[in-house]
Image 1 (cartoon, rainbow, N blue to C red):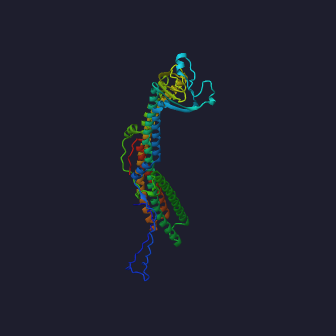
Image 2: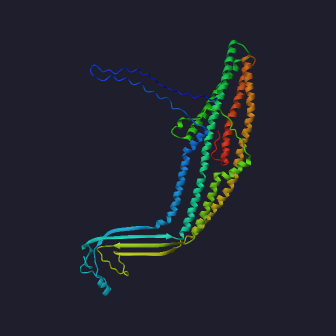
Image 3: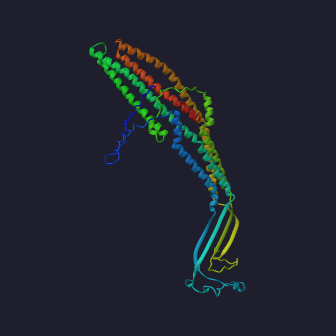
Length: 488
């Protein structure tokens, strides 16, 4: 494996236990002396957790906070749907009351014979007496009332359908969120692999450059050869440039590793790393472009979400039309009151505010005179539906274009890598010849520098394009709506 080894400093303590002597009783009759405990082993740095690309992707999907948030939003939308179903029953309620009133009785026999009410002689208080001097007693009231909509259920049903389709549109976007998580993991993973491979390449080339510089310094000291101090300075400048390239590549590697650990998540995220494998192109044959286009039109989550969004707006238009209907409902009202200190009149023709018990059922029809407002609400819903239908057609064209451009990028990158591989083989031969010639004193150090510089440029392009090709395959699957494939 050609990667920079990770050094783990492990410090351990060992203790040799001395053989125990037979226990003997102390002259004073005490217990034998306790043996000293060996020192505890010191803990070393935590072990690195190396995960493959498939393992990184699985953990990132399982720990994605974005996916968790989207699922909670779906739960909230489901709760809204249930609220709409129960909304018509919110006008059903009950009320109860309790208070104190002055006691008073009436003679119902006088009512029957003379048609008028007077206070009875045995009553607590005479009719003409002041209430401030009377005794007070409790009174209880209870009322249960409600309206059961009949025509309003049309509007409620349409509103519920609109929200259900909106929730389905949101649910259809979940695979898209998961695809983005997978894609981000692959980008970070391949960036780490490419950066570490470039660091190794720079390190190997730097070794050859150092040997060439040392030989040049030796020749200058012995005043041998045709090279000058200027050639030495040029070598040192190029050596410093390689050091700068190493630092830049190391920064890329660290940034990508931090991003990967963030995406993977978990308690051991700070110890996550990837296997020390060399960078390679993913072996996979590209299918025809039309196959990817067809797959995208069938599987892209965005298109499925748009289809449900159109259905949601169609239900909204139907709901706006239903608002032109009158409201018809079944009204029920039951009232009960009892006041022990007040005589129950017992005549249904007279209103008794203290002792009563009646039940009313009726059909109620109402119509709001805000027709103008309803008309423009309907026009608004129709315009929204027309706009979304136009967006749906535009989305189809945009998805086909995205698939085609991604396909061209991936295939072009693959062809460029094939040409760079040829250049790489030629550059390696150039380096070998230049190093041997310079070591034999037949060639200048400038030739070694030029060969290494060309080789570094080629290798930098190869590492960059290899990473882009591997990530490009992931992007091609993403734009084609393919979910769940991991390319090692």
